[in-house]
Length: 534
Image (cartoon, rainbow, N blue to C red; front, side, top):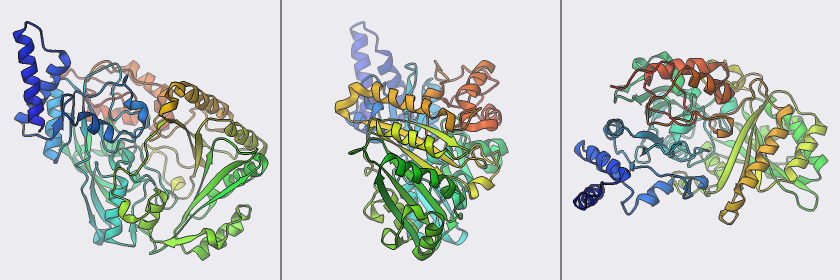
């Protein structure tokens, strides 16, 4: 089907040339790239003239801001069926001087896995068909291709064993590749660390088409791919993951509380002393939507405990009696059943379904809190939230294993000294698109309001919650273009916010594996020494 699209493009160019009119640059670029793919045996791709192009492009865009007409699409979308297809797609893109964007799930908060800045022509390599997961219960490991979703991984692990799990996020449609590349915080992280902390090996395809494993890529590159952000190093084709032991049944709950501002502020204030200090087996987060009803505001607490509900209730009743938790709030289930629950799914069988998560227009930001916020200040925060447009904040507890891993162990630096992270978000629907800047403006003003209460020098952020407000690289060509000045700008704007003191080692790793800056985006790691492309 894709070779037919190539033939049509070539025919269009031929007809235009017969009428003494040059073929358009976009059509010629797509045709040349398509010809390279076909001649190298890659047949599963789509170009703008293909009937299914728009549907394929939008299928994995979960932030609808990047479906608007002012967002340029790729010259082609390639869906590799194998590692060799992936290598050939990369080499063809380089040969045709096209930028490369790699999409594993489509959840990039700023669309960096499927857009380019400055109208740079690009190819989208969509890993959706590279989603195989092979679980080896005997060694408690799994090999998973980067195009697998977390739901597909959890489903495969759950089918193989009730006593094994993998510590990663709650979104079932989130792509494994991007999630692990940014660290990968989840409900098991206080017990077992991040997803990236549990990577044992990987297969990386470099800009020149080499396939590297842990030993051949070297320590710096293996370190960098585990939390240094996606889109900088090449393409991680697959990951070898350490699976972790869990009891046959875990305890899960979500409980809501509604009341006046002072009551809710009191619960939030108290949670700061509880959530990060519970035993490692406990995860207890807070979700606070914007808005109010009749002067009352609402929050909800979500918990997962790697123990029986009797034990969970005993510990939480003593440490957080203000929550008023009772046995009826708690349910025991297998770990894999809990992943379906927290993903908002009806059954475990829904975990591999890629189309379950609703799409929305949204903008997000993030912060880290290192000292408890005073109760009076918390009340002001809740009041501010109550006046906002549709949105929310999510507070995720750290401590436990998160605090015992050294900040330089992986690129993700937010370890000891951080009580919890904050994710801020606003969203809107299609009828409100004209008001998008108003909503984003409110979010930015709230973020500014929070400055006294969060980390400083730098004000930290989580790279998986990408935020271009922090700064951008502003590349103007498909590859190359870096400099010492570009590195300094990246470090001072977003680099230290995401990676703290680990940024310079990331630059060294980038310079080793991709000195020509072939894999770049608005917040990719820039190389320090650029070698001219041959």
